[in-house]
Image (cartoon, rainbow, N blue to C red; front, side):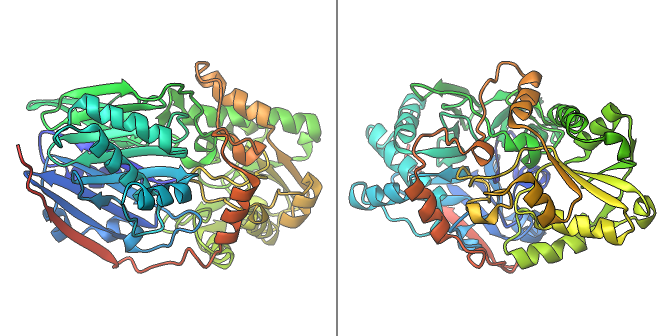
Length: 507
């Protein structure tokens, strides 16, 4: 899970992209980067850490131009946390291209061999995003005649990118001297939306991972980039689009609606907030059917993403809703943080219990999901220490039993608390008196009810069904072997890179 944004505007875009990345900060807290284009030059600044830590006034002044892209990142399996891995990435042959990517290629090792042996290209990092960039560069070279590009040749190149690349990818890129390119994988796993703004100087366009990045900057949400589609906006602001996949299907990642996306976003025509309300209703029905809900005194959310579900659950069951935990908003998401010890420590720093709400009461804690169980275990213990009589725990999502290989940091089964365990065993491990999980069929229906046009979802972390059809047991074993909590080491937020890439564009 990363956040991407691309803008073609009529005025300088550095502040606009910065503000958009701040809105998308929840999608990645490991690194951030911005590249702008002015005249014949790319201007880049990127580094490790939060957006606010990577960029200073002097950095923003060095990012001129009315077109640019931005990226916030967190690392997935086998990807080191360093400024060298920060995006956007750049390649200069045959066209200067900068690229930001959200997702994960499942055939990146195969592509690396192809790039080296057949395409005569070299990849410098372990990032699959750099692999994707080089595949794109090669296919643009193959499509172009006399090293000139038109929208048709660009879209022909994306068709071959789709043919070669497997997995999940939403991409923004700038081709030097031509314009902004954005495209989405043929399954539509990772989100990408288009926004438009009419100003005195003309029409401006923005593409981003979530609609909130558009609306927060005054852009109108036009639509989603459809699965397999590519859009191209030239330097003059002319908009072009084409379906570049033969058999696209819409399978948005259902975990976006459970946890990843902001509640005020709309993805594939689906309100994230509305889906979470519906999740609360379905979870209430499950509780009513599986336990005596009248023994519950109060319902409490685990801040923040479970709040809509918890409120709706309490309303449906006629129970009292209370806020029992205060969140320190200056601590990063524990789900994203590397290392079990660091995650455990961070829970106590991030949340503090309001003792008066717990003392002598039977409490139902509601969370959006349970992944590793580290946070859940600590929170249940905090509730008991605050004086709770009984602690019930409910998850608005089904058990996470399988690795995710499409860009979410849950890649090995042995890290997942639900893998190979019964509900009773999981409840015992997190210390809860009783544990209630949402059913997968109910979750899917909750999301489908908001937009009936979307009928399929990427649900692999719950179901073990990998829709791209290329994820084998051997692949999962290799990912597990490569992964170690020590791989994702924390790095100094001052570790930044500033580049001016001067390119002569021949007319």
